[in-house]
Length: 143
Image (cartoon, rainbow, N blue to C red; front, side, top):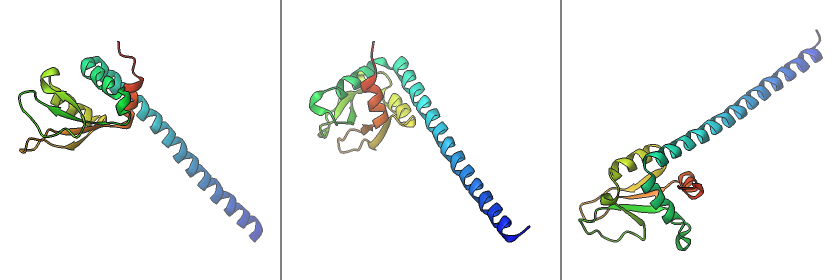
């Protein structure tokens, strides 16, 4: 074998390995993204079945044309008065059974993000809808 054949073989082998690695990573990422979307849809469907009243209220809030980009909300009890709600949506514990536990579940599924916890100074816990969850709510055809 001469040096030219060896060099060409080396370059072709290197290119083949690099391309193989690139395409393997590319299609693995696409598969994982598809699986993630399927998982998000399953999470949303499960929440719709288990907590339709809360999700309908959230959907109604998000559809308000005056607050198209509003994504923050607070949780409160009608028994207490709180400081300002920062123009958030407000969901009351008395109107939804197990509201705090539902929100913990939604947080663990990346539907919402906790912004602050309840403080002793009369502040209510605040949350923010994730964008994928907001889109799911807005596209949901509640029955």
